[in-house]
Amino acid sequence: MAQGAQPVVILVDTTVWIDWFKGNDTAHVLALERLIGEHEDLCVCGVILTEVLQGIRDDKDYAIVAARFQSFVYLPMGQITFTKAAELYRTLRRKGVTIRNAVDCMIAAVAIEHDIPLLQNDRDFIPIVQHCRLKNFDIHPYTSNHKQSP
Image 1: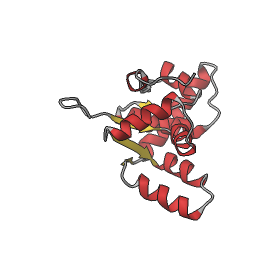
Image 2: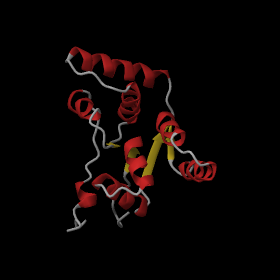
Image 3: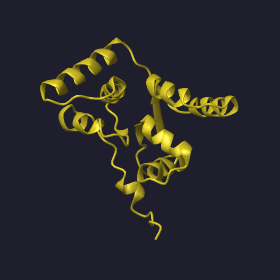
């Protein structure tokens, strides 16, 4: 974190973590790497932790990733979060939008509940940002100095 700058508190979605662990060179991964390098407060919640860990096949890799995730801020999810997730889903359905994965509503609900932005790379979050007060993390300040490969 730059001297005098306010700390960044951000929830990082499963899509970004998976791309990061795979070594994919995306703008979202670059932003995550900069956030990690600047020691910002990165957050996870139960469903993100579950989604990331369930996809790891190797036991050694599983243990490494599970240990790594212990260093992040853990956002609890209670009855209010799950009720909010259902309300998000229902609100969007009334607007003619169907979210493909109910877990995305749960992730959005926890971000809204804690009033923090979400770093994500999943199209299901677009209507939640547009209609339901979800703050999308702006990656551009974290990727503006990144030179693309020719």
